[in-house]
Image 1 (cartoon, rainbow over the protein chains, first blue to last red):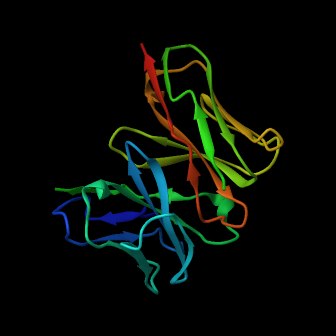
Image 2 (image 1 turned 135 degrees about the vertical axis):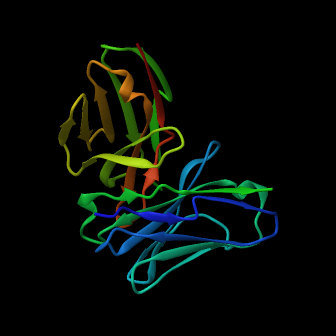
Length: 115
Length: 112
């Protein structure tokens, strides 16, 4: 059974640029959530999508956005990159509302470095 | 707003010893999750605790949940070097079940 696939694994961008990260959840899972992990702030929730709709949103500026497609794949976009956006971005795959007891499976992450 | 705090943040222990990681949370949480992260790797799900008094065990790890005290514990029995990793607990705010709020993480170093 394929796991959660995140692409790319590593990315180096320049301040001011924008970036798009991709996450393909486990087959049959319809919920995708995104987290940012940094040494200083730890793991922080960005947003969650289910059936192409954003269900939850964390406390991040509007430069961070996401979407989900009909095949449950999700993308997150960060515009006008800042040095502080350098982080490991993790996506988590879940079955969706009512199935949280099964937990969430995380992908390997995308390591973004902003220079 | 749900806040999750772990202690200790760093734990160095000898192989064969027992220890407990504590996870306190500030308001009600629908469920409590424990994850493991190896350096440079992603998060591996360990346990999902659903209700008061829940206890789950896998190998040398045992997790429990006390919803009245808003406390979960991860107990390590007879630690081995392979358990060296960072352990995170996470809660999900009531009504926002797709959102996980993580503790700071506890880095466990098991010395031979």
